[in-house]
Length: 317
Image (cartoon, rainbow, N blue to C red; front, side):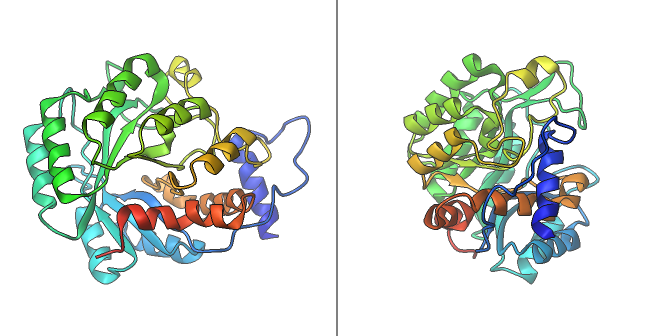
């Protein structure tokens, strides 16, 4: 019954419901091993949401950071969870929504201050190129944008290199010709920093392969690659994003299987649970990934499910 339910969830998530030919078989054996969620974020008052979601889905550990809003700052909730269950959580620095052009002096100073605390084991997601979403803020530019060659960007990455902590940089591929040369240069300028690329940038397998083949210091989270293209505000941007990692029946696409096989140490399972609607779907999202991971040989599935995240973040402190 649970596998059948998960299959229906996969069909809804990929837009398959109502297709001419219904999916009649589950995509493979369900992965039942440990899971480390390599990326999740919360606002204030969501600590119980996190613990309940982890218990119901069987997620063992989580890399967690706060969403930094004026009225809904989640930092207190993250600190509470870390204090209550220190071994379950790898804690990242808070995420700002106000950075534009270059990182601000205040954000850099604040983040460098957090890095003096050993409990912070990575720099939480920084939005470098982020298209407006249907369910989020709308801007005149249609995106949030931070230039990879900014002076304060370099200042913060130098501090991250001194602390030897991973850095989570969000950039989407809807303007590949503009952005890939800039991030190619950024990754090269800081070869000692481990960069984490959320959601594979919503990129195609060819784009992800280009990044991974060029830079050994880039890791990729698989959050949202189980779903259809994210809800960017413009259809034009949406059409420039890459394919999801599974077909309409939840079967892993051969090109993505080949990528996982070629780069077994570079991908990490993650949900990017963030707002209420994504946390409400947490158990179903995890179940989708258990079905996806079940289509891989067990050693590879374990690498994506938890071993790579444990290596990159290190044990919780």
